[in-house]
Length: 41
Image (cartoon, rainbow, N blue to C red; front, side, top):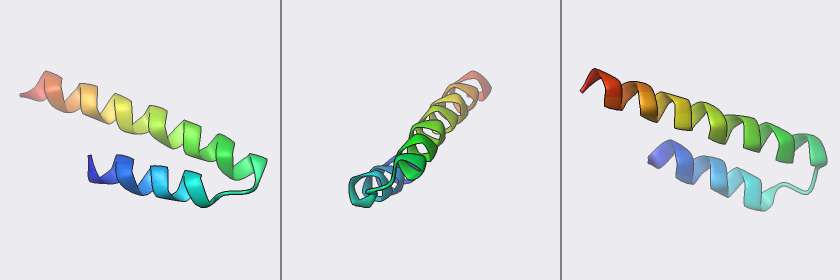
């Protein structure tokens, strides 16, 4: 959850298309991590 907040903060401050794309990729990666953690639990 904290990682997702940090990513959103970066995304809200980004004025660059490349950074925006990187933020989307990071959000997808965090979502995959969340799913993996739920599978472990």
